[in-house]
Image 1 (cartoon, rainbow, N blue to C red):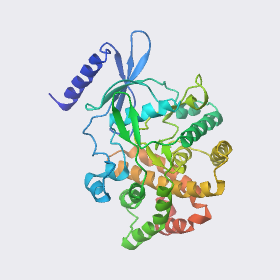
Image 2: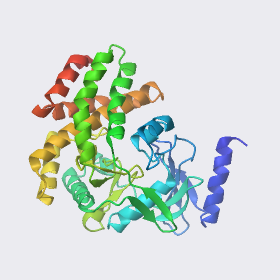
Image 3: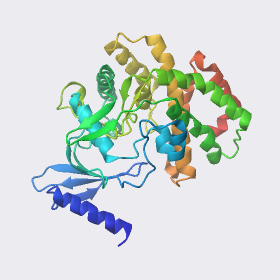
Image 4: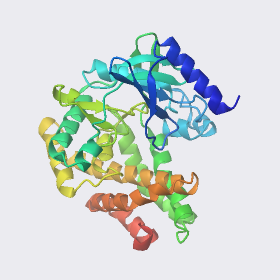
Length: 366
């Protein structure tokens, strides 16, 4: 039996045990991850979502007590503190989010060993699709900010727990993980743009610029961070109240991080243009709802960590194109360079702007 046939048998048996053997299954569009999804149409007209995360498709996640050396030996997921798609990470994180009154999917059934779960279907109202169809983006972003404020007001636990004994550690987005993020650009961008060459001295300068930014970001790791908080992972649920109007997806890689990180994910969205005006309005909304926040200090952190996040995504997209044969991700990169220019307009990032201008000519920023 081939691997695909074997996996199909596992899914069928899992659904049978969950009482869903007769559900009509329809595959949903995938993303850059190793997960896949199907919509399950039930006889009563309702629907659920089947999440399929093959358990050995990725390198291991990071043990809470792993040293930097052990993380390097374990691979990228451990270095970056990614959950490796683990179903128990999704289940535990979903339970905590729902406990905060937020709209993560309810878990109908799961088998972490096999990497399978059946989830509540929150519908197709993705922010990105609604905006593309002409819906006013302002109330959507306002509610996305309100949900972030709710997350930032909650004390993040060390362990996320769900019924049935499921638990997952909420680790800090520490200096090792932030360095792993920043190192992606100098490693992978020259593979996509062969005209670029970063010698040892150039890479050392890059490292020296980022070291204090990473230290500050790690020291500010104080809130629950969704980590992939953008318009393709947020679902509009207008019938719900308050922050619960924003349905949350793809949160299994959650960490404890600086509050500016998810703001960057939302407003430096690689897949859709967020205008300077929308960015300004969203930040103003955040400060309105969190008046205790030092606006000037937060904006400095937002620009610095935002620049790091953008560099990370540029490196990931260069890797997806060159290593993984997914050329469509190159089309997102010009947008990211535009966002980076916005961040680099902050005078406190003059050294980073100088590095970019000296080592990545405008023709390579495409």
